[in-house]
Each structure stands twice: as C-alpha cells, then as structure tokens.
Image 1: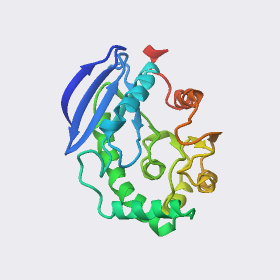
Image 2: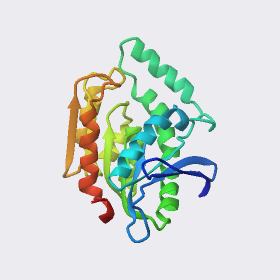
Image 3: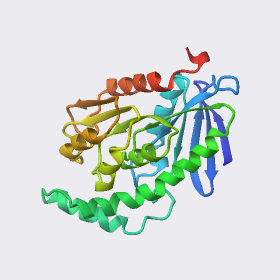
Image 4: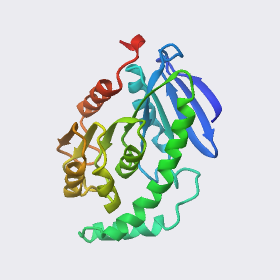
Length: 253
C-alpha cells in the first residue's frame, strides 16, 4: 500500500489517500489510534458505478462519525467506477435492468446475475487485499466491520472472510441467486436497513434475503420513504450496532 497524501482534518482524524496495486483508496484514522490502542476498522462500502470522488462527501462524513467512536475507516474505488476500466457487459446488463423496471416488470434472474456478480467477483478479492494491507498497520486493530454499499459484496465477504466481525447492510439493490445461497452460511451479527418505499429496491427480495441469513443476531430496521429518505436516527442505530460488536478503543471511552 503506497500512501500518496496525508491530511489532518479539523476533528483530529487523519486522512490518507493510497494506491494498492492500482486501486485508489482512502484510510481515515482517529486521533486515539496508536500501537498501544489500535482502532477497530470499518470498511466503507458504496454503490457500484458511482465512483469514490463523487461519493467522497458522504464517505468522509461516515468516516468522521466512525472516528468519533474510536474507529478507523477505509474506502476503495469499486471495480468499473471512477477512472477504473468498465466491467465487461455491465452497461448492457444495466440497460436491460432499467428497461424491465421502466416496463413495470421484475428484472429476470439472468439480468441481475449479469449486472451484479462480475462486480462481486472483482470487488471481494480487492477488499481482502485491502484488509491485508491495512491490518498490517500497527495503529489498526483486528476487529473489522463492513458498512453499506452493494449488499451482494458484503454478503460474499462476510461469508468467506472470518475477519468480518459485524456487518451493517443496506437492502437497496437487486440480489443474485448466489447471494441468497451465500446468506445461509453467514452467522456474523447483522444490522440491515430497508427503505420501505425505495423505488430501486425489490422489497420482497430484501425480506427474503434477511430471512435467509443464518445469523443468531440479525436486526431489520425498516423505515418509510424512498432511497434518499433515510432518517437521521438510522445512522445512530447503525453506530450503536458497531459500538456493541467492535467496541470502542480504551482512549475513546
């Protein structure tokens, strides 16, 4: 991991931009993080296809909120987003999805698989490589959570990587059949947010996925409103979830 810039923020958080074998990323660490008191880490997921620069204000806000709890955060540029090359077939699959939605039809399983699975197949190994690099830093602890982004990516990562101790998921995208199958192997604590009137979300599919998770502790928070109508207290609920399962560092108490 090659750090390209280091910026101290006004709340004491340190923001480091980095490059990991051609993958851009940003690491935020709280002022309390040190080798003597390493900070738990939250992986900041984001929607596919938008790009980290456009998402930066929201990512930085989430990272600052996490730092106030004593957590470090990291985000990486998703495959096919920003200046990264597009994923083969993604544009065609997305057009098929939008045509089905515009016609008032449920997108077919094949369309969902073609759109989402290539992203998952690329993104999950990149997250694992990022974890390898960030967890080597002495000020970062071993407790890791995943927050938001494409739910199929979070499910795959939680299913195969035991370092994920808790996951806060946003039920806001269509779910491949493979993701449903992978959910049945997950026992990680889960906090799932569902916007009940999200125009881009298949509500029943989200409920079926929640039912499929094998986690002994899983919570579904459903709020009225569309994709951009998430209430402010939903973030407070998610923060409480990560505080319970990752725990603050001693200096952040």
